[in-house]
Length: 203
Image (cartoon, rainbow, N blue to C red; front, side, top):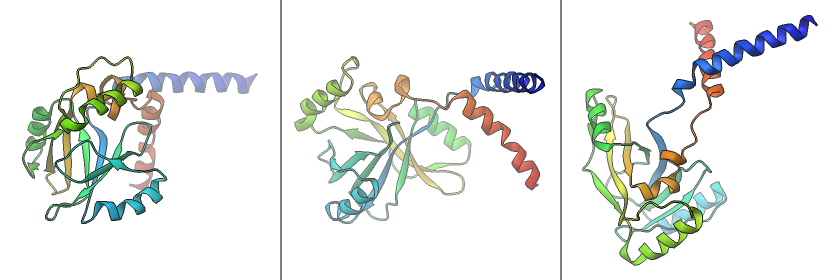
């Protein structure tokens, strides 16, 4: 009986901690794609396909030779494309408002590494893109435009390079953002906060 009571009290304590951190469940940024620039995209596909165990397909743009594939059910994509100058591998994070995100970046000592640019869908592939999107998300009524969104490469105050991207509504389902995003659970966040004990022990 004593152990049942102790277990019940522990469960209540954990439940209170979980509820305490539910307000932290939603984040603004989310990794949506990793851009891997290479000299010869078609040649390098074999390695990445073997690593992830999935076939990469030609991307929906005709502005650059590019291939892509989803690498998680939560939305991130890997993109293999032709390298330009000293372009490094770059992680791009979704933000609801690109201008606001840039403002926050600059306030924190970061800077732009390039110009804001569109992520165009080739006019030749608009119909095919729309068809596949309807097949994957038949209830999504967002209007398809000629672009997935707009992006920019940036760097934080330490010089670490990454990208920010604001996606069009019709691309939210594809990259699992907005209403399609699966946030960290309250339990995950509660356990994360509890892990501060480790830092205190190492101090």
